View (cartoon, one colour):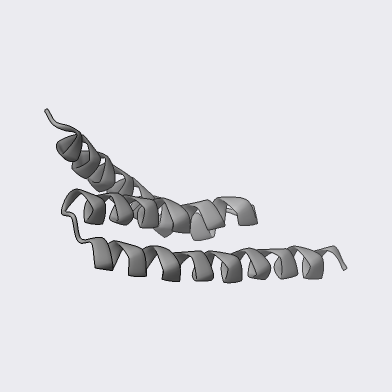
Length: 85
C-alpha cells in the first residue's frame, strides 16, 4: 500500500474512534480527556483531507481548529479554576 492509503485509513480510524470518544466523553470528569475527545476526530478529518489532497479545505480547517482549540483550552482552565473555589 502507498502512503496515501495509510494516511486515509489512519484518518478514518481516528475519526471513528474519536467520535465514539466524544460521545462517551461527557461521562468523564477530567477536562483534559474531554479536550482530547474533541481533538482526535479533528486530526482524523485532517488526515482524510490530506489524503484526498484538498489543500484549501485542509488549511482552512487547521486554522479554524487552532482557534477553537485555544478557546477550548481557555474554557477548561476557567472551569478548573471555578471548581477549585
